[in-house]
Amino acid sequence: MQTLPNPQTASENPEAAFDTAIHRRKTRPVPVGDVTIGGGYPVVVQSMINEDTLDVEGAVDGIRRLHQEGSEIVRVTVPSMAHAKALAQIKTRLEETYKPVPLVADVHHNGMKIALEVAKHVDKVRVNPGLYVFEKPKSDRTEYTEAEFNEIGEKIRETLEPLVVSLRDQGKAMRIGVNHGSLAERMLFTYGDTPEGMVESALEFIRICESLDFYNLVISLKASRVPVMLAAYRLMVKRMDELGMDYPLHLGVTEAGDGEYGRIKSTAGISALLAEGIGDTIRVSLTEPPEKEIPVCYSILQSLGLRKTMVEYVACPSCGRTLFNLEEVLEEVRAATSHLTGLDIAVMGCIVNGPGEMADADYGYVGKQLGYIALYRGREEIKRVPEERGVEELINLIKEDGRWVDPE
Image (cartoon, rainbow, N blue to C red; front, top):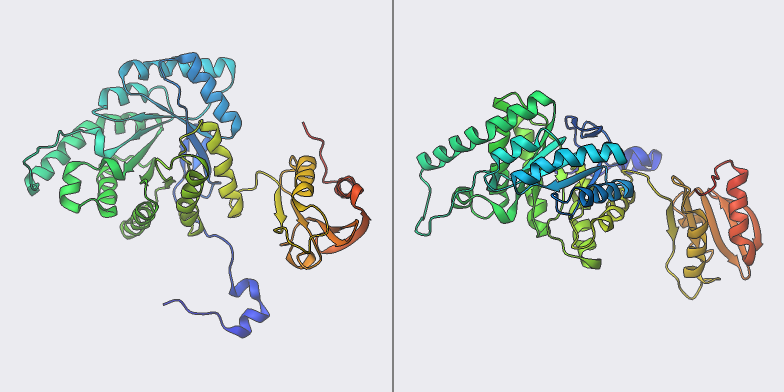
């Protein structure tokens, strides 16, 4: 049972009594190219190109665009041996025309030979336990006997072992990526269509890897329904803690859709877990060009204080007390300062929502008097200037403090 803080202790030392920091789950570091997932490193952002991997130049362009947008790891799909071999050309062209980018290859149905080939050319291979050894369902089946369950388990081990050995010997990584919508039939019959089945599917593959002395693993348990996704990750953490496992987790809501709802749905699932300290790398899966996913990822991380990659704007909602056009002024301030990564700037429309609610911003732009703007450094008012000079004088204040850089 959670214990409430002692009121006296809270008043004497609020920060100690009410800890607002996110304490991330301790995980092992897993290198993926020149990026590290877990081990206390910043939460990694990644996405996936939608170009056909056989189109080498198109794939190279897609990878470059995503990486420049901020996707620190880029995933590609390899549905055939030809696609796997094309990765060798893609990797070479990237190095010739851009620079090395950490690459992950997606391997699905009966993909052992494909995975072995592609493992030569990428930094991480993602396998789906429900599809890696694909068993055609029997329409008249009602259950799996223990012997049948174990027999398929042995077949999985035989099929997975060469890939594990290859990745282990090359110092590369694997993502064991369970999807709720593609659980193996024997897991569905044994555990039902449940988070438990997802977790047990992941654990089966983890145990095979561990038996072969391979630990460069990242785990994901994605679902298109947020409550299922949350339950699966929380149960996975519980089971790993019980088993002494410390593998990093890749978070995502699969098939989230597009537009506003796709962004909200992804944020609901990913943010809930990150706030609990769960998660080491994320992808927002939108039915849109993949470049659209990256800003959402970074906004999620910044809103939780996990990464700072942009200016944080604190702004009150407009109301009848506002002394200037808040929406227009916020855009003016943003246009002038959005390149100053690391700053917090508050734009407040009136004295009611002014100094007391600026959330410890570095600078404040506050309407305290009709026609005039009060400029703040932290919580200290520095000067009042005519409204038409407000943005100009804010820039001057930032320059005086030596915190201004010219936009590129």
